[in-house]
Length: 64
Image (cartoon, rainbow, N blue to C red; front, side):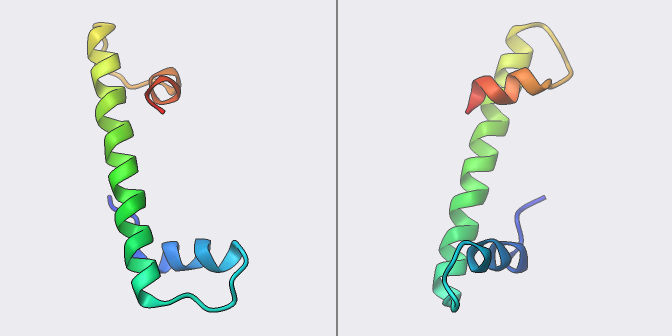
């Protein structure tokens, strides 16, 4: 489930700037989604290496 534009825009607005361009929102969405999928793939590899089928919090922490 990718991060949506409305969620990204809310995060950006809460960080300080009053106005946020659509271009900034699009870039932020792309960046967040790429980062999230990269962490998920690394965490899955760690779980598989540990011979588990379940991702654990520790896998996410190590994947960061």
